[in-house]
Amino acid sequence: MGNGKQNIFKELFLQNKPAEMLVFLKKGKDPKYATQVSKAVDCTYSHTIKVLDIFEKLGIVEFTKKGRIKLIKLTSYGEDIAHDLEGLIRKFERASQEKRKKKEEPKK
Image: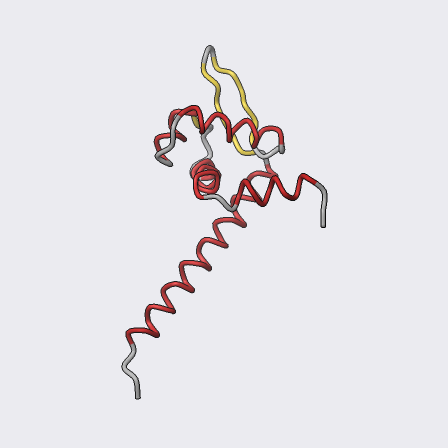
C-alpha cells in the first residue's frame, strides 16, 4: 500500500463536505472567512474549522490573521487539487447525464 498520508487524502477528499469546501475556496481570488465556508457548504462551523486545520497541515490552505479574524486562502498546491477535483466532478456529472440519456432513448 502507501504511507499514512495517502489514506488521509483518500478519506478527506472522497467525502462530500471537504470536497465542497475546497471547490468553494477556489471560487474567486479573495481569501475567505471560515463562516463563509461553513455557510456555503451547509456545514457546522466547528466541523469546518476541523477540516480547514487538516487542510493547513497538508499544505492545501494557509491562514492569515486580519485583526481577530482568520482568512483562509488556497496554496498553489491547494489550487491544483481543487482544479483537479472540479474536473473530476464534471466528469461524474457528464457520466450521470449520459446514463440518463441512454435510459430515455427509445429501444429499437
